[in-house]
Image 1 (cartoon, one colour):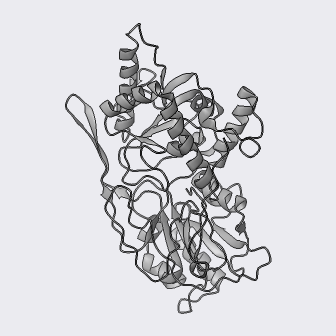
Image 2 (image 1 turned 120 degrees about the vertical axis):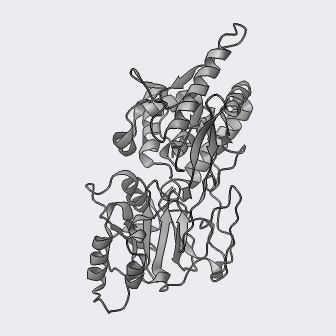
Length: 436
């Protein structure tokens, strides 16, 4: 089944704002005010911003309305549309070399710019129409100030830089590292109208408590409050995961050309196994129930294991196959290189359950699972990534009893499972790549 076409911008052309995103990243709600074209959401997902500049956007407290997720363009120097290639030069800090390109920096900023039809890397920090993208976790406040002053030839009392600067923070906490170190100093150099902040985790107070015989209760927490504008920036689909899927499909299934040269819908792939949650109950002889910030993951694995064992006692029903363990490498290795056995496992399972860390929202696993074409079940979020809707393209469980019931329901209803999985896969692949 072919992927659905990407939605187009429907705003009045005279009011279009140019926003771009690298993932994901998973929109650089940019501000490059252009009247010609719209760069699709994110250096990942600076989406939903193209309304009339200057009007305020009111955000709500509902589960799918996140402060900072919908905002308007702010003025800066006009974009010169006389450029022959119509691309925006992007200067990345730290640089885009392989020695610097690791983790999110590589997956979303560098990869997103390299694959974008609208952006291109530049080594010239002051090139005409340049936009700066700064990974604030890998760059200190002092280093940024020095580079900005040097690039702009600024003295302590001189004028500000004349181009947009986007700060990206993929860290777990809801704070923003670089800005906490001296936002006023950055504004003095960049100018408030040119400074744009993007943050993966905006939630604080999320926690897991245990009540009534150890059954966990998920407390979602609340949106952190900032006295300045912050754009929400969820994780996107990593390119190395998609390349890994193509590799496994070729080797194990004889399917070539994915994803560009095939109409294959991964949700319709023949899947022989039932449900997977990639978190172990034990690490060798050591239980992981008390592992810091992973209490929820332990309870999810425990619930799936108990459900499968209880169900499999009935000789009149087909057994449920349940995988509750890590596949491939985790941590630094897994975050930097796709693991083929992990990808193979996701392609073999009908349902992939994901769970977040106890104290913050957002992780790689959600988009990885969606990109595999499995039906994805996730614990609640204050706001699902843009385009994901509960019951439409993803399933949300709110406690362990709810999880067990939904696993049973979707294993018994293949058409409903494949329908939701298909929409989730299409959403991830069409709107959550690093350059979309």
